[in-house]
Length: 155
Image (tube, rainbow, N blue to C red; front, side, top):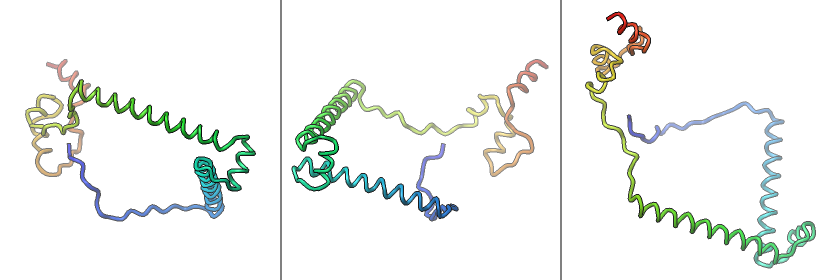
């Protein structure tokens, strides 16, 4: 198995053929969701800090909420995040104490000629050809299971 390495320094440009209608629709949808995200962020930030502006007043009236209710929801979400984080961190410490440092991801050892011969899927000549330089075979050098059964029945 070859160890992973960095990719070549070539720049890869992917170009596609997009119609103008598709480009405009993608742009409008993207702008809509960016606007929605900005409005929600303004609402949450101004409601948690207690700053009153037009967006906060409008959304509070629309959803029949108050800034204190929004602050309670944000606080509940933050509390749940901390509780879940502490549970996962505790589980991590428990697993580390119980099982220790596990290093399972190691590269396998190099395959030897003896290993390849023990599989009995290729002849010695083909294994030697493969271990030398680049080789092109006219026929698949790996012995199929059907050929192996036929070979065993003939002996």
